[in-house]
Length: 227
Image 1 (spheres, rainbow, N blue to C red):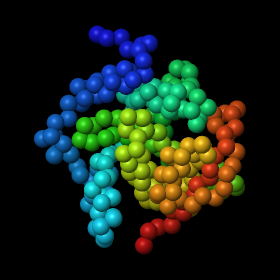
Image 2: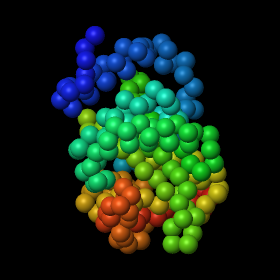
Image 3: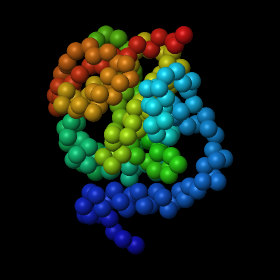
């Protein structure tokens, strides 16, 4: 058995992905039996023009599933320095374990939920996405956050996962809007907000992690039922 502790981050990611592939052993005949309704993809939406068709063809096949006990290794990978440079830096192992427990405990509650992001058909966990209640400027809103491992960024995975969260929030019909607060220095996350039709309200000072002030963009998406 190879001990991964102390290995370079890239090597740890390799071992992590190898473990997932071996443990899940998802083959093509098994994938065909999965419920297609659990897939998050734009490929089956009505096609209206060439540009939209092109976007649909490129959409990755992704699903999200509630955070579980087995997702701690994923959270440890998401805690790498390059993943947390806009969030105040990596947390300690103790903090990560506590965060993992909070993620697990939110499953099934009405105040929000955290999910792991699964890339299909390989069934590889590639990131996290979630939403929760927040009091913002005197109003109770949804806040959304996401994180995708570097090797899988730039492929449209985050956009698909965030779209699924938006759909869930709309279905709940609990709050009027959903907000995202990416750092002003995080162009990738800000681009996702723009792509998904969020409106940039303004810049704001946001305390995250506790005790640290981060300059963020306040993006807002109205959740009126689609007609």
